[in-house]
Length: 296
Image 1: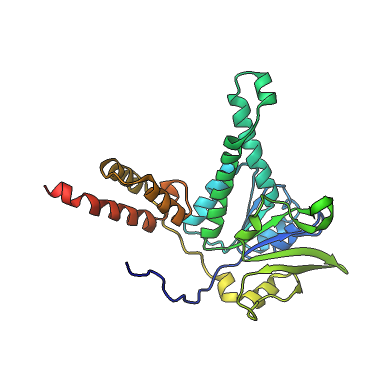
Image 2: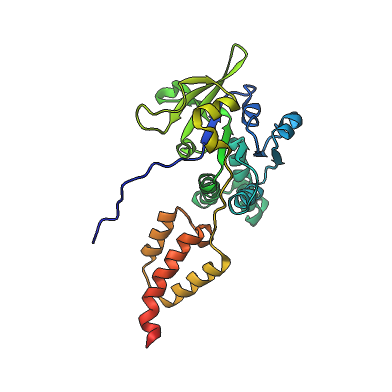
């Protein structure tokens, strides 16, 4: 079997960043500096900045509903719009809301009040929470938009409860999702970003170790053409494709491991989370398997 690897080509990636800092440092005001932004506000932090948001040609959705957030992300992903940047402020609240959502579900399904109070939210509970957060993560990556996610700050401890530093207060490993991670500080009255992480080849970093946070600096360091270009819609799997792939799977007997490999490669858990192109490849594969049978 021939090897499938190819030589990589340079790609211009959208800005995908996580910024964290202490309360009052100005994470919300930093994020809303971006023009043409769609802001998902989980703490009503935008209440005092309507003039700034309107002048930036931006819009705000204030919600603590995880289901609403996922629906908005899907719409931004699949529907043409004029927004260039998505701001989620803060992801800490989204994670908390996700836990609260599934806590309510599990408590509602408990047979008695006593059962609800002592119910052990084990693997099934955390599995639901992680599935929702993974769906959000997936769409943040898929979006052809700049993505700015803010987070509360928390202390990081090592062995013996020795404080090692600070980091984002989010689901474990969330920072790995982003190409850029900044810690926001207030230094001499200026909002300063410290670069904690930047994915780049050695010697080709776009951002300095520290810089004053401003929209103009992001245009300068990351590139105006990338930050200001229109979003490209992603074609997701259609209901007809989902029905077709499930029909074919009822006819063609293939190992569950094959289907799981398709899901893993696409980084999805359900057929409707695939792109139109991804699910079509699965359909085409299955059709080839049944052509000889149907031809008889």
